[in-house]
Image (cartoon, rainbow, N blue to C red; front, side, top):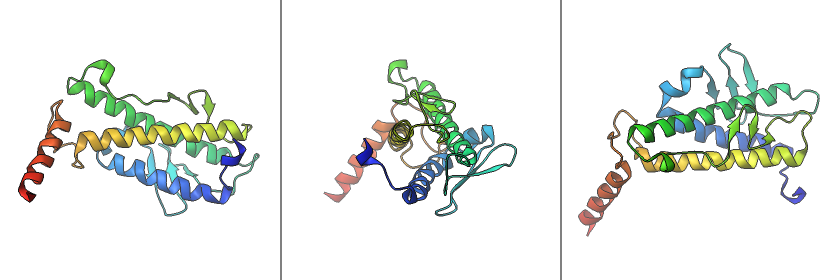
Length: 182
């Protein structure tokens, strides 16, 4: 596993990218993600997250074992936002009468600061465990992005038809475009 570790200087770039993905998803469901009043602040290579008490936490380094509590809190708040998006997606699927076994669910369970059983905090955590937590977080984010693409047609949710066939609507639109070009 050690061969897959990224140098620490690449972490801000990684966080910048995943923050932008979550912001893009959150743009379409703003009212739901702001229920906890967590604000995601992309800010280029220096992404931050603000909690409900207006405390700002940095998702960039340098981070070390003794000064990583703010970084740990930022990553935990990010997991909260991702879990909240997953709950929203699941409720949207239920609202659209999708069978319970087909409703959106993250592949790796998020609970507080853990993804599956791996803590995303860096304080007093093994590098391998932390890396697995990040890997599972990225996988969960990828699933959320797939759900988003398949269910919103890149339109704000207020404009998305409220039916279980939003994916089939997208297919119909695609077929209409294909027939126009032929």
